[in-house]
Image 1 (cartoon, rainbow, N blue to C red):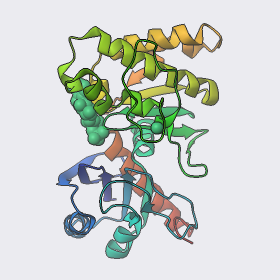
Image 2 (cartoon, rainbow, N blue to C red):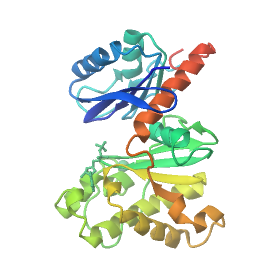
Image 3 (cartoon, helix red, strand yellow):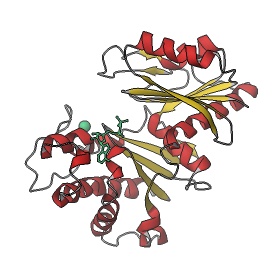
Length: 300
Ligand code: ADP
Ligand code: ZN
């Protein structure tokens, strides 16, 4: 079956066609400009592709409440033009196929549990550390939404005593995203994160902040694996630093065997950057299955 996949980001849209094995057959990147222009370009691309369903992993915040009037919308984003944009509806109406819709990070965790290193696991987290920080939660075999969807980038942390820089989140003086996203690193240290590889103090502080959040996630959700992706995590030296900070902060409190083996517990994404788009393929396949069974998805 030909399935469409759309990884919708604030700077670019990745559109792809693939199948239920996770194989990506073709893809295109479209810059994110005004919604009318960007959506029209994506629809032009997908219209020719004869897809049976579409999965969208979208930047947020988004409305995922089944039955909500604004299900499938991007909601309160500060990104100009995109607030209250009906993403799922635009594709559903134009392409007349079932549309699966979720956050970008939920798509990534779904990609990893369906096709990647987390196959067979029931409770897995995916944290992206990039322009923003987002958390995808797959719990007891399903993606988690709750009242909105998880906003794991905004958990509150203890600011490091040596860190005098002001958190860049407009809502919180001490949240993970405001202290540790790529632009926060850039502002604090005066250079793009990718240029700071040789500065150990940058990564020690970054690892401390990420580890504080992971410890909270571990204590609350008891995941079987935590996957870290996004541009900042390309600094591979972060992994051992984060693992040792997690060990130090947990202080041997939890006795699970997984926590004795942090090299296989806190890991980089395993699908060569395709965890998101492959997760979107799975979202499309799931929407197709629901539709075939006559189940409601999305708006009532
Ligand atoms: P986005 O979050 O916009 O989808 P990314 O995940 O690539 O995209 O995140 C972009 C952020 O990651 C920027 O702040 C950039 O400086 C940072 N970044 C990108 N590549 C690297 C790298 N190799 N090392 C460290 N930081 C990086
Ligand atoms: Zn915040």
